[in-house]
Length: 127
Image (cartoon, rainbow, N blue to C red; front, side, top):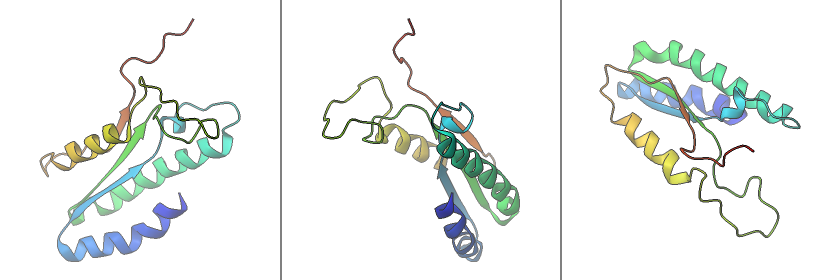
């Protein structure tokens, strides 16, 4: 949240001078699906979503598009056991997130996907 808040004013000013651009903020599905023990994380992602949506409305008429990418389970070291090299193949990868950003960037300038919820297509079935 702090990084987006700090970087957005100078970035959007620079984009205005250039005639437009695209800002992507990476949030999380945790913003809309709270988890026990994750109150601070959930709140920070909820805040980032609100900040991004308000910023989108502030700059859209300056030719600047703004989108929130909200990935679900991503195979990172974020929640891994220390020293663990085990990968969970059902989870999204960083490349999946990057592909979503590239695809959004290629959308026609007349359209704006302001929020993308990205989930693994086949997570483990709940028992």
